[in-house]
Structures are given as C-alpha cells and as structure tokens.
Length: 81
Image 1 (cartoon, rainbow, N blue to C red):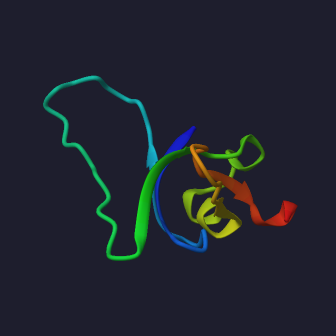
Image 2: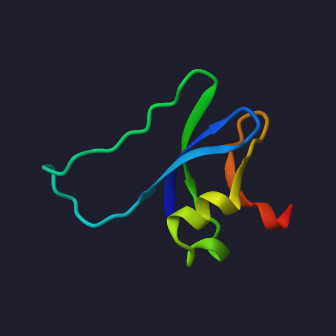
C-alpha cells in the first residue's frame, strides 16, 4: 500500500493521502498534494506492519526517514525508533 505524504525537513508527517487503485477510468479526478514552503511531497510505501491500521492511526504512527544522496525517503514506524 502506498500513500502520498507531505513532510517537513525533520521528517514530520504533515498530511497523507492513501492511494487506492480502484479504477483506471480516465474520468476520475486526480488528487495531488501541494506542499507549502519548507515542505516536501513523495509517494511512499506504508510499512507492512502498519497496513491494518486506519489512515489516521497510520499518520500518527509514522515519520519520514530522510536519506542522503540519491536514496529516496521512506516511511518508518515511530515505535521502531
């Protein structure tokens, strides 16, 4: 499961939109999150151990681990760190 995630420079999750593949219709609206100044947006995998939680609980349980260089950021559980 993936989500579009808005986060700040410390990895704090500001907002999430859970991506659900229900249809491939060209007539469906497209949701796109717009980060504010100092924020970033990325499509990230939700950790497998958290996928059973509600969207609100996932939001509260994760942060974005920022990686250096060419590595992509990733969602990680706060409980593991």
